[in-house]
Length: 94
Image (cartoon, rainbow, N blue to C red):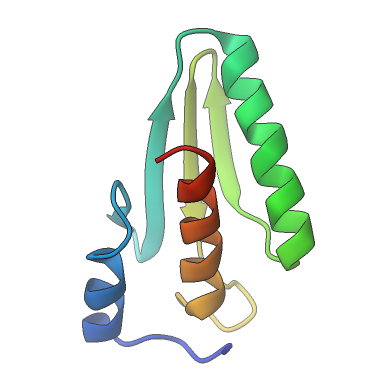
């Protein structure tokens, strides 16, 4: 499960992850909200998911924008852990 996925496997997985793309060899998605409180609440829910999966995102927040990057730093690439977390995040907000 911690093996780095090759480009074909990543592209195939991205086809099933609406909104996600590659950015600098990491999975990436940007979310926009109507107010800061909504963005922060979303980040809190993502943090809880990430903690449960023991896999934590790189992210950025500015007012109503949340950007998330996923990569398995310990193996230096995208793995099934990243895909699983991206899918879980999509369950929170498609």
